Image 1 (cartoon, rainbow, N blue to C red):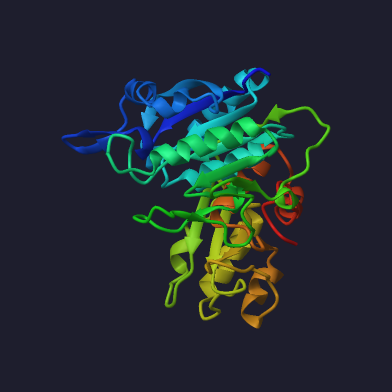
Image 2: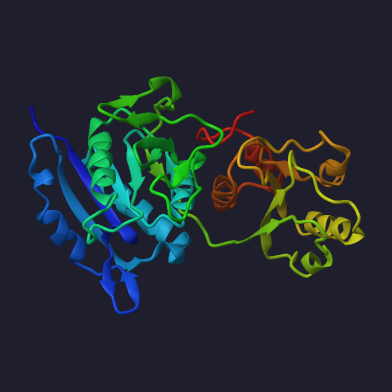
Length: 337
């Protein structure tokens, strides 16, 4: 039986960084050299793989729509040649990239596993080795047709994941959806939690760099600072509200902001600031201004999924009414109705 083939796409990030006089930084050619020195990757249990280094390699804080499109194009160009894909990525924006790709890669039928590490390969003690090897094995296994994030023994749906720690090895969690797989002594996949394949052909939807803002509500916030923000070229706003989608109602400037947004056809989606739970506009009186002004609930979507879903739907060319409806639909397992 022939070995499976996996394509590794290296974007940059801690996992392949080396020490420089200015701190850890990615360096072209360094990660391929490190992998060539790993005896574990010569095991018969490891799938055949190739490594594609994107150019330039980036700290993930510099990842943007441009890089999401480049990753998507790389997968599209290599889709038929490989059984699965592993994307090596920095942790800071990993959940954003995982969420974006989950929407961009339409009718996906192969595993796309995003991983990285908190400690780079160049350090003797690191979490890079296990994360890479396990991601390779899951990608080669081929039974999870969706974009996932693997980190520290758990596989999460990409658009359900969020970074929860800057300095612990257990850096990610999926607050509103269970893990798809656990990597203990054995890798155990929960098939009940995995998306079903579609019969439609695989395709890629590229994203356009529209202006989208994320605004976090806090006690005492003066909403007047938002009024100049809402203009005709602002396509979307993600509001991080209190609790189940509540906002303070002491400031008439916010109502003017909502009215301007409606006039400019700016889509506004509301998330909860809580780690777990759902934003449900209209449950409390304090969320009524949102409900009356056409603001949509993001339910239990993460901020990362809400932002990237907005990019995706706007890039698809849908009308404002269609976008508002689809923001509240479950497209890739990103929300619970």
